[in-house]
Amino acid sequence: MIELYRLSGCPYCAKVEDKLDELGLEYEQHNVMPFRFLRREVKKVSGQSGVPVLVDLEHDVSWMAESDDIVDYLEQTYKE
Image 1 (cartoon, rainbow, N blue to C red):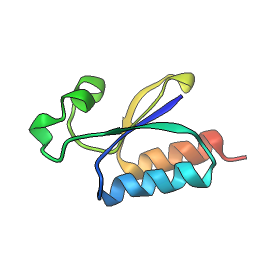
Image 2 (image 1 turned 180 degrees about the vertical axis):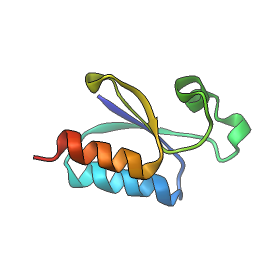
Image 3 (image 1 turned 90 degrees about the vertical axis):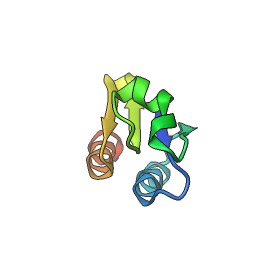
Image 4 (image 1 turned 45 degrees about the horizontal axis):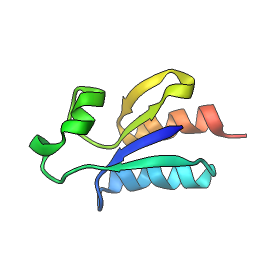
């Protein structure tokens, strides 16, 4: 299962979500708080409070940040 830590209205998160949808991938969304100091859940996973953060344990990705890196990873890993 793919997990995405995201913030509503974040264009970088939307870019990742668009790629996930384009590839037809199912994923679990974790909506984070707008204030970075309240993003305990994403900080626990990734050690930082920025979003988006992707987790794909099926492919040994415990966490990945930066929307461009995530999109590249998704294309390389899941594109048919």
